[in-house]
Image: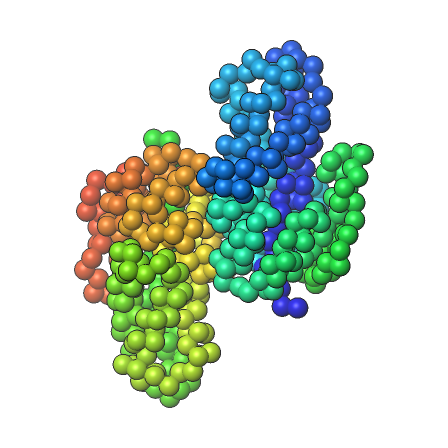
Length: 234
Length: 234
């Protein structure tokens, strides 16, 4: 294998979206005197993520960046959690919680090692501004931001993966996707990319039942980014 | 002013393309026993740069990344310099000299200071792979790579500048272009971006006669990236 670049799924693989969103909404609710189940709010918000992208994938609406989809989904769920009274500025600020997600403990040390040997790029459905702001806050050492907004296609559409390889000037087999999600890796492999599964057993909380192991014969399977660096000799 | 992001012209502003290409072609010619005027070769190659992009800008051919245009232009000039005998692999290797351009001495320390206060992105006509490889070699601390390939439009087309601001999630007036070229800055200003002229008096060699000063009332004019950092309080 001649892997030159590692591309990364981000939500769940690089950062803990559920814990971070739960923390942010709990702070907002606290200021409003509202009692809230933060993880349940995070799950409710995230549950509208795939359906919103599906409309774009099907061509029912033009490509729309994730910040906009997140905001539409937020407006839908706020009343259900007693936060329907948030004003425009408060909603925008909470929506930008996705720009402030915390990395897993092994993320930054793992990426730092991997960067010595490989080009590192995001390959996320998050938009460029979200990824840039997240990276600056969390210290994620990307060489560049690729993914849905740059490709104008949401994963798992093939264009998302193939555009990343093309923009890096590499053949698909010279690029690996690193992800905690079997479905994402299967789609990448179908495009000819190499595949690295990294286990994130707490992405969906203590009762997680999906993506608890590599379900296919991926090129690598690792328990953390540090374990992946070991396995890739970085 | 509320500048949040600095975007950078790269060829000439960030890196010394002329000196770097002259050095690379001199090494190739030396191995072939050919005597060459390196700077004249660099100038000849660069002289075909704007005409090649003009065909794309006019829609005479679909968007084509700069690595491809550079290679077509290289094939045109090699015979004139006694290097028509280079084979495919040698041509590809020389073409990638554009991925190995050296920064000006103030570039990396200046960018390092500017990054503490501003988002830093390229806004170059160079393609993503060229910019990523250059940045890794030279240690350029970009937050992300934007510009022609991502926008699918070559500067000075307005889409190139406006797409960069949009992808950063900012209004045009929250984004500044840093460039050593008056024409680039005028085009950016027409799109509503802020403008920072940085003098690069040796870009075209000792007899440079263009862009020897800021010819318009740009927001900032600086003698180096360190001077720009001083003026921007970074």
